[in-house]
Image 1 (tube, rainbow, N blue to C red):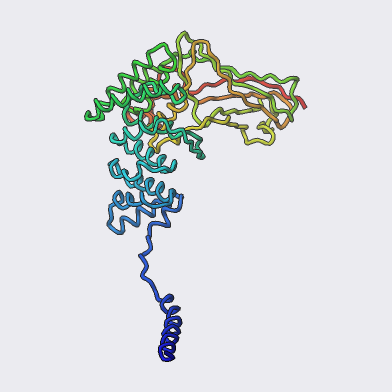
Image 2 (cartoon, rainbow, N blue to C red):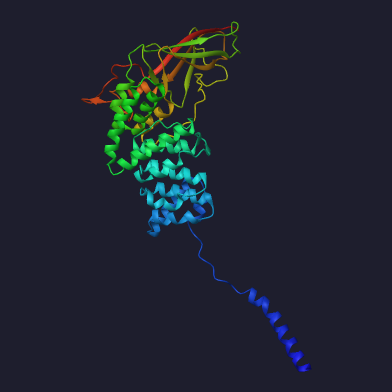
Length: 412
């Protein structure tokens, strides 16, 4: 009995002493993922490094990055979708693992990819995203996921069915149903056929008397892009004098050099029909110059840049694509304002303070993308048309900027 007890105690001691050795034994580890640090970083340079690493490995980016749909980190998943977009992955099936993702950031990345790569197969996903009211805030502005999906649908399908995010739910459902029925009937057509049908639909909308439909038609033409430009130009055509502008400065009393005088650029539709204008995101430009300054005396506003340029705050807008033609049309679509006959818009600004007493010319300039698009002699790439090696000047139509000026006398 004593021998048995001694054996049990000895075995227990040996096992207890061996446990730390077993715990300290190395365990096999899976190799570190070289892409993960880049996908955890929101810097665009990190996205480029992801693609560089995949090219060096000779791996398909679309296939490799689709596997990150199972990663628990939503930032990694969203950046993986962005990297697929940058890699040119244009088959919507490659993104299938991300379609039910609960992260708003991932859905935004999917919508961006679908629009940029013009994925026809993404239409059902985008239709399902229309009611999504979650909002995204960026340096370019704020918008809902549904608004982004709506924009992408118009770009991809070249169609619009009166969907309004602010309309009653029943009206939204009716518009979605019409869009879904159209897609089911036309999904096997070529995109060129979608484009031509969309131009006809947009032309019909733009010719209506109902202002929301008219704006919808003009906006759709802009989002269709260059193929719709001839039609858009005809609809935007205006004569000199159709848009009138004046600068109004109304100080409470004769202003002194230290005062900031309240002013406004007043823009009026002086024609007998609706007109569209589209101020760019840069807003209103104001220049103040002294018109009676002694020789050699500068005349810019005190404390401001020479000359005194100020930009009014602009409404949020999606960043324009790198291509200049697409950028101008996209900016027009986002900034479009429809003016009824006799309707007036006011753009408020301040003039002053100035350096010294005297008479100052206050000039306000509002660039107008709508008028710029009607200049047939100027291609949208910004280069003037050339004939026999010489630049061709602008011909006809209204000027591409709305300008007016007033004179303000500042006292010492």
